[in-house]
Image (cartoon, rainbow, N blue to C red; front, side, top):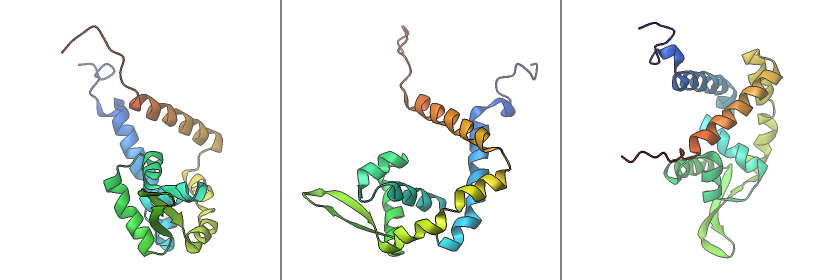
Length: 154
């Protein structure tokens, strides 16, 4: 089969490009987050909480596209590190409320240098990275949208 028309060539796969890019970019965060005692998933939790705290556990799970079973250990480790507190929401004992501690709020000041460091390390124009982010947002939305129903029944 002609290499230009072979749909199964690795270098033609969107999944391959996304997987390698994600691994490589996340690896760039590691040396920036380790001195703060954070993993990349923990950093994402804190980013969401720096936007709004307190938040419910279900709100965090939805925002971060994580299932509760994945989110719960992240929250436990961040709580053990003194960066957040887990409790029950006022007025609804069934709802988990996640709140930043003063130490968690203070860590934001150290984290403010991370985005610029990543942009510098990538060496790509900011506009190009913003365009990539927009395209990835469209990919995320498309991947969550059910396919249109066809006339075929299986």
